[in-house]
Length: 114
Length: 112
Image (cartoon, rainbow over all chains, first blue to last red; front, side, top):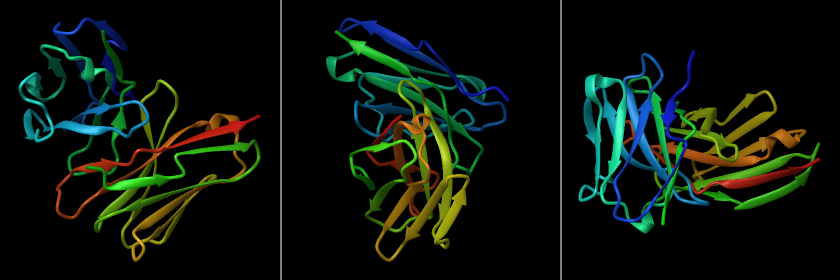
């Protein structure tokens, strides 16, 4: 079984530039999560999808962040414009519906904003 | 806001020794999970313990849960260099459907 795939693995951009991250979850996993992980901290949820519906985006900074999950499979997280404080690792995870207690994580995208 | 807090923040032991890390949380939970994160990698689910369970084992891992103290411990026996990683506890709450909150983690170094 293939794991959660994320790309790119690393991204360096200048502030005010846009950036996008892509995630392909495990086949059959209806729930998809985007997390942000700052250095030395645990992941913090940005948005959770059930199929194509964003059911929890309360922690997503909507002025600059957006996400979509077309057709309920792949997902894209976008930041526009990026700020210095957005430097972090962005993790995508997936799980079967109703099984948030067993999530499978991708390797993450390490974003550096200069 | 973080529900769980791991203790210690960092731990360094010799290979073969046991490693114990603790997690305390603030409010009632449905389940508590432990995850491992190797450097530069995503998190890997290690073990789940439900609120009505007190102890679970998986290989060299032993997890306990004390709901009266709102705490859990993860014991790794006979540690190996490959166990070097960060370990996170995560809790899901009865009031927050399908939402899991991670603690800040314990960084474990196992010295060969």
